[in-house]
Amino acid sequence: MAPVSAMLPRWRLYSWSTNLMSLGTTLYLEGAEFQYQEAEKKILKGIDLEIRAGEWIALLGPNGSGKSTLLKLFNALLLPSQGCCFIDGINTKETNVSEIIRSKVSIIFQNPEDQIVASVVEEDTAFGPENLGLPSPEIKKRVKEALTEVGLWEMRKQPVSSLSGGQKQRLALAGVLAIKPGALLLDEAMSMLDPSSRKSFLDLIKREHGYGRTIVQVTHRLEEIVDSDRTFIITDGELSWHGNTETFLSMSDDSIKNMGFAKPPVAVLKEELVKNGTVAMSTKSNIADIREKLCL
Amino acid sequence: MSLIKGVTLGQYMPADSFIHKLDPRCKLFITVLSMVAIFISDNFLALAMWASLILFLTKRSKIPVRALMKSAKPIMILIIFTSFLHVFFTGGDDIIFSIGPLKASAAGILMAIRIGLRLYLLVLFTALLTFTTSPSELSDGLEAVLGPLKRIGFPAHEVAMMMTIALRFIPTLFEETERIINAQVSRGADFHSGGLVKRAKAYIPVLIPLFVLVFKRADTLAFAMEARCYRGGKGRVRMHPLNWGTTETKTAIAFIIFVATVIVLNRCA
Image 1: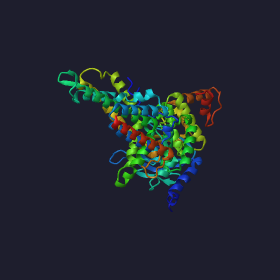
Image 2 (image 1 turned 60 degrees about the vertical axis):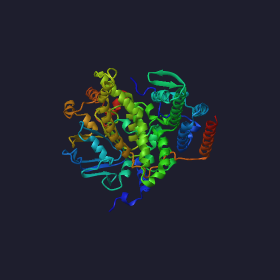
Image 3 (image 1 turned 135 degrees about the vertical axis):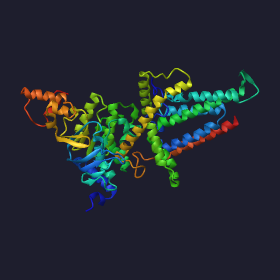
Image 4 (image 1 turned 90 degrees about the vertical axis):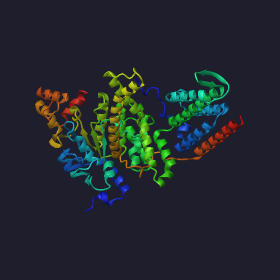
């Protein structure tokens, strides 16, 4: 049977995907492999994973392990050489589905300078909705909502060059929020930010997750994954570990070091507090709670 | 060392003014017409009228006059050089002074002042367009103006998008260049001593990383644009659709009358 996407006219598909926004988006990989043409090495090797709607996933792994390639598969920027990638049940390999997929799944890259297209704040935010061919009042509404969400509405007429690094990354977030995606992919989106900007950006991501959006976050800093539900570790193109983030952070220092990471101070602190009996053992959100209480 | 500091050419300055709100096609029409008209204005009365108009428009657009003046700074060397050539190569019998075989006549000096003023006014008028029109509006206007050429296969949308991106990345590339220069200086590079060839060679270690960076950036930007559903001009709409109303018609007519008046005065004076 033909997928739903093949049965609806294009304008209906956009409104259909927009309506799904509040539900989050499901991302599914089935034996996904990726290899650039004429390259000898496979970047991704037979990855099977399912990310449920509204989940927050941390994607870890050394440089060059294939994390960013995986995100590009979810956004249909790249298509699997073998296997399949499904976004809300739509196979990314189907013809004429890339716009629908990109209206469901948005990606934010490491450097905001590389993803801001227009020179003025509101014009850049409107870039996505303009590409979707939405009516002008709807674009204006979305731009206002997105810029208000990230706290840049007052600066909507300002040139992009006058923004700080943190503000530029928030603008990049506004640009994708205006598309109203069900999933946000963060490709080391906080690595170039100072601690204060990183915290405010992370707070925004938490809020978006609270609205039901699926979050997939690539990072090297374990303190940023404390709020995530599950963690996937990719090594040399393969899924080498996956499980509950709390379980991952509760592993011994040596185990985490052997995987190539360093335990975040807040997780170490939690262990000490648990050892001393200050904090009751268990619950998924303990580390996040402690961080909040200590204002870290 | 700051490359971008003080460079205002091509920068957009947001303000709530009548000129900012004008349809970009109207502003493009006025700018193109002014370029032709300024070039055929060869007496000082006409040039003074152009200067007054630029000053009037600057005030109306709420752009600081100083910022407008600054915008001509990077072109000043070109204006001075062109004027200098006219002093010595215009010819004329009434020689005022000479340097070796080069003779400066009164006519040459007058011509140099005229040419210098024309170029300066041209730069100011163009700067006024970029100060009051955001790059996206400008490219929308340009795309609309070039629209009819699409029928013969001219890539109007692509040209307009290229212009938007180029203008967007001017400040970013200045910053990157500055960063690379500082990195090379900290490793002993010397950009200020030696002859012209030596200095030019010193910039090779700046240009190579800059080119690599630009290509990498273009690659990521292309991904980012695709990720935001960009698929060329097909199906793309505008948040603020272009709207040529009565204000634009009145402004265009007023400008045509001004140009006609200047041309008549230019001929009569």
